Image (cartoon, rainbow, N blue to C red; front, side, top):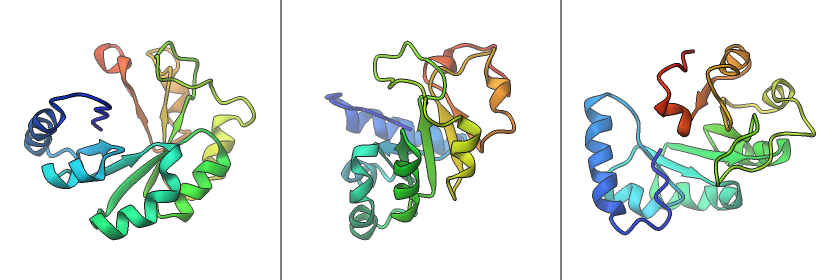
Length: 155
């Protein structure tokens, strides 16, 4: 997933990521920018929670079969699935030092959260070599940002 925000060279970077993903037989999602996703031939788009309501219109306009959404609550996760998300990325599962991280889930334990969502759930946030094992049977997958640079994380 490429979350480019305000990167001035985002098209060039996204094209290179698409090439690399194709070589590795991996899927490329573009964060919050369906127009860029279409331009570079990405496999789909990832929407932040604030864009969940736009999902049906984005699917209709851009014809992506792969759309995921971020969710920070069970109600947002359910809304994403209702609107057609193929997977929900739940954040923040553990406390994180990331500048874009929200507070960790408080009102609902992660395993309960997963059971309440009728779609694949991917954990994000604060995942490290110590706590990743707790997620092994709890969800469909994990996503890492800074953890990707730590070779010790093994699932």
